[in-house]
Image (cartoon, rainbow, N blue to C red; front, side, top):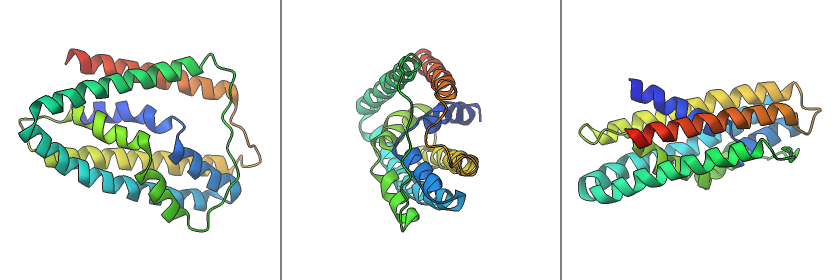
Length: 201
């Protein structure tokens, strides 16, 4: 159970990090309303559901057939976490603010699905980070599916919450710079801690 909790704490700051998924969902909210953002969130979750099935089955095959490859993926995942942590901490000292365009989509569920399916950040989370938390001595498929369910559930809760929040401040087209820096700094610190824990374990 502690492994699942640690996984949740590791991916949570990644979910809060602005990327194609979040920007698309918030653009729907800013352009229309919270319902549009929630519909986009459903599409994003469906896109990641496809990733979860492929990865759960693929990781199981890799662990059985190519243990060296699995170990390589593990270290690439750690390097990716450190890279993201450095980027977030670096953004704290940047003067750039996050801009969100008001752009509505006629089918936010479908667009959200393809946004998540083709999102490179999402792919890296599944292929480089999720394997870190799988016990090779147990059922890898079930573990992969459980971890994927945790990730998708967190995405649904966080993005729906952000949709409601941003619908109330839709008149603003720019996130408060100071608050964004606090989010980036905290997320970067948590990712660095997670990477350090994975290195020593």
